[in-house]
Amino acid sequence: MSGVNKVIIVGRLGADPELKSVGNGQNVARLSIATSENWTGKDGQKQERTEWHRVVVWGRQAENCAKHLAKGRQVFVEGRLQTRSWEDQQGQKKYATEIVANNVQFLGGNSERTEGAYNTNKSTAAAGAENSYQDFGPEPQFDAADEIPF
Image (cartoon, rainbow, N blue to C red; front, top):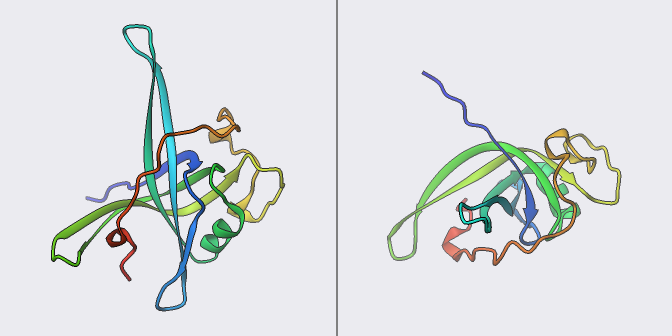
């Protein structure tokens, strides 16, 4: 039996993209994206919860992300969840779950690029999203062991 592994998020970057070249010369970018949900609690108080997502982007799309995106920029990401494991320097097994992107659309910018998935026009999925930067609280800090092991 096969399943569906598809993730779609619209959020804001918590930091500038990190671009690296791996052993075979292929580029990979790592993005940290915040999504927030708001609701009113039973007591009438407004509540907010922010979730941080690790996103990995490969190839030319990674280069475009590094070139055009910056902290606070809104993006639409479509991809799949992937969990990887490795051993740290102390021999402890570590795990990380991240979104491997196959489509990244830049939202809310001033430019009107239309390079396939790299356009800055609002997508219909993000039409109601706010353009102003919001402080989502501190971006999670990752250990050096959290780096993509290639």
